[in-house]
Amino acid sequence: MQGMNNRLHIGLVGLGRMGLNLALNMLDHGHEVRGYARTKATVDKAAAQGIKGAYSLEELAGQLKTPRLVWLMIPAGKAVDEVIEQLAPLLAPGDIIVDGGNSHYRDTLRRYRFLKEKGIHLVDSGTSGGVEGARHGACCMVGAEDEVFAYLEPLFKDITVPGGYLHTGPPGSGHYVKMVHNGIEYGMMQAIGEGMEVLAGSPFKLDLKEVARVWRHGSVIRGWLMDLMEKALAKDNALNGIKDIAYSSGEGLWTIEEAMRLKVPAPVITAALLMRYRSEQEESFATKVVAALRHEFGGHNVARK
Image (cartoon, rainbow, N blue to C red; front, side, top):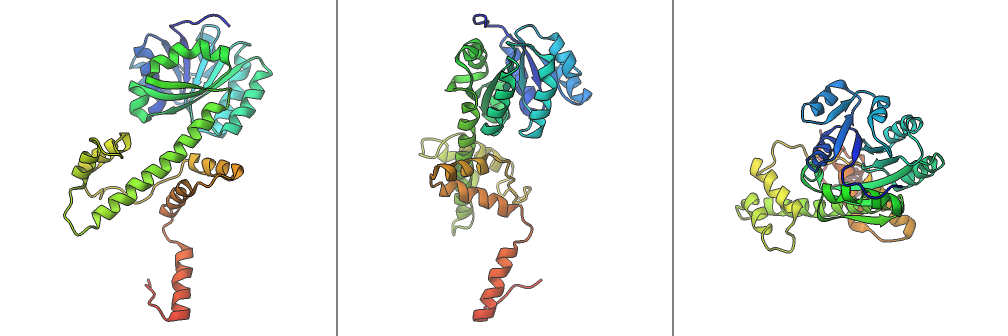
C-alpha cells in the first residue's frame, strides 16, 4: 500500500443522521466525499450540502480513485452483508471497506475473512459520540491491519476529537471495544434514570434541570450524558412528552453474552438491558402471575381491569 495521503477520496454508503454528518465532517477537513443511499431524495439532500452524489453502488465504485475507500454507515446485520456482497465484485485487491456501524465483532471477523480472500481490506471503526460527534468530532475505535491503519490514520485524526481515536488491534477488535462501550453506556444511563426518578418522587420540590446542571460542574458524575440530561429537561422538565419505552439496539445483549462466555459477572449491564425489555412491554405476564399468586396464598389485593 502506498504511503499516507492526507487528502483521501471516500465513498460513503448510508446518508442517515450519522452518515450525512460524518460525510460533512470529512468534507470540512479537505477530503473528497461521494455519498450513496438507497433513495434518490437522500442522495439529493446530501448533494445540496456539497457531497458528490452517487445513485448506485456501481456508480460510486466507478467514481473513486484507487485504492478505493468505501465507508459504510448502515444498520448492523443483514444490510451490511448485502452491501458487502454487492460491493465486492466492484472492488479490486488493495481496496478498503470501513464498517463504521455497530456490527457484532463475530460478523466482522467473518466478513474480514470473506474479503481477505479477494484481497480487499476490511476495517472496523466503532464510532461513538452520536450525531454531534459525527459532525464535529467523533470517538473511533479502529480494528485494522497495521499497514491499512497507517494509511487511514490521517482521516481518523481529522474526524475525531483530540485523542479520540485508537488502533485497537486487528480487524474485529474495534467493534469488540465499541460493543463493550455500549454495554457500559446502558448501565450508566439506567443509573441516571433511576436517580432522577428518586429525585422526582422526593418530598422536596426539586428543579431536576437545575440538579442536572449543577451535577455537570465539578461533580463525580459530570460528563456528556449529564450534559444531555440537562438539555432534555430544559425542553420538558417532567419529560411528559416522552413515553417510558427505551428500545434495545443489540449491543447491550452482545456485551452480556460475551461476559457470560468469559464468565465475567456483569449484573449492572444485565439489569439495564432487562429494564429496557420491560419498558417495551405494555403488560407483564410475569407480574400478573406474581399478583395472582399473592392473592391465592395470602388474600392480597389484586388490581383488576
